[in-house]
Image 1: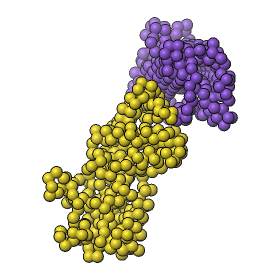
Image 2: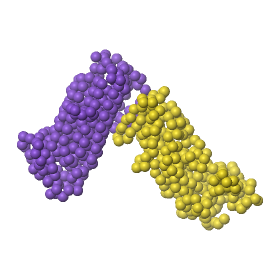
Image 3: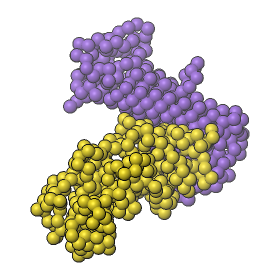
Image 4: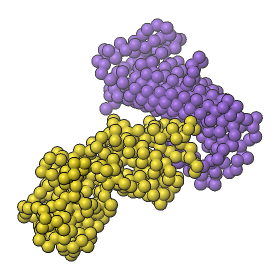
Amino acid sequence: MSSSGLNINGIEIEDTFAEAFPMTATRLVITAADRYWALRAAEAMTGFATSVIGCGCEAAIERELDLQQSPDGRPAIAVLLFSVSGKELEKQVVRRVGQCVLTCPSTSVFAGMTGEKKVALGSSLRYFGDGFQISKVIDGRRFWRIPVMDGEFVCEAHTARTSAIGGGNFLVLSQTLAGALRACEAAMDAMRSIPNVIMPFPGGVARSGSKVGSKYKSLSASTNDAYCPTLRPLTRSRLPEGVTAALEVVIDGLAEADVVRAMRVGILAACEAGQRHGVVMITAGNYGGKLGPFHFQLREVLA
Amino acid sequence: VKPLRLTLRYSGPQRLNLYGLVPDRLLEMTPSELAQHPVRIGDEPAQVADCFEIADGNRQRLVLAGDLARADYVGGGMRAGELEVLGSVGHYAATGMRDGRLWIEQSAGEYLSSDQRGGTVEVLGNAGRGCAAARPGARRGMRGGTLLLHGQAGDGLAARLRRGIVVVHGRVRGDAGSFMIAGTLVLLDQVEGLLGVGMRRGTILTLAETMPRRHAGFTPAEAVELSYLPMLVRACGTRVQEVWNQRLTGSCTLFRAVGDRASSGVGELLWLSQQEKDWPLPV
């Protein structure tokens, strides 16, 4: 474990890097009659989307939009979905919108980004209308109006996708679990204001950081034993003396600059809150450069 | 930078055909190529220089000046840029237009936008018969884009409209939306004839104070909250937005009918009114 010599509020920043990998992403905008239902649809749609390893995609609410930014002038929520391929992303978008947004009262869904790479949305879901669906082209954008029991589900025909980055991260190492939780909560509060990024794990934080591979052949990932406090005497532990909890904040972003900004804001907030709660170190997860081409050096992120 | 300006000097008896005299085709031409660009006088081939005085400028924006009421196919085949006409135009304006903006200061002749496929056409004056409609012998009318007509429209407005948005601020002198295949027709003033006869699909939204006669083939339907309507209204320009907001705040409610059921159509008629019976009884 090497020190960068960097220290924020008495918390050491390890001289290491977060290793991230390429993904593809899209943004959807969900609107509804009021904020309550827009949030319910967005939450349902982005549920069970913490990791591509087991969920097919990583997704979360990005932000709430102002009414002026809302496509139809109703309360609107922007969500981001990340996946490893365009094909898988499209499959996840259609399934999730079909099961979680189409079903939610009063909602509509719109493309949240433009671009040449298209992802089918309403053009697949329209068949639910059983021939009663209506197409409407407004300002060059095609919408499908699908009759449902509370009126109409309006759904843009396509959204676009863009290349993106998954797996930006930092780890908060603390003397107590409570301290690590408080520091991560502070980081989350600060990072939610950053556009173009999501933190897909529950509350934005993962306690089950993983390493590549396993002793079991069927598993591609397994527990990151180097950061498990209970395994300190049994494995090559990377936990400093006195640390009893490590939590990982995972970040997916549309561009490197977005991930860097989110990491910086999050680490600074964690260090601000962490100094009162026994946080001793901030580090990052990497696989020696074998996993992905994006390496976010903590030193440079905080420079 | 001043736009490219062509001032009409032809004053003969023949009609001009200006198809292809559009900014995107002139963009990379030398001045001599521009002068030789083909147009037609009657049935005879001619050149731009035979009909216009040329003042070269920014080719992205083309201004046609003079009385072009006898010039047909203005904006024909346009794919990009801006074309402004300081005066009126003849028939078939915006034929084959796919993108860009055509602005006409005064009026347009017959079958304006009848073969428009994209882009925006704005006419400050009136338009003749068959605006956005299928031409005689054609199966369908306008196929895309937006037409904003500030003045009145002649008979046969949007007949067999296939796609796109047609907004008419003034009165319609005859039937409107007959046999519409799809697309959207927005009306701010009265229709002297019938609305949506034989309509298959599509939307007719009328914000007129006085409702036209209701065709018997339309059946009242639930006017639920249609969340696409604010987007549509926004795309129809500021005048439509103003009227929409005024009438909604004036305690009007949205009503809806579907039809023309006489021909198994599932199009929709939408109107704002104090009460449904404001719509006259079926004819």
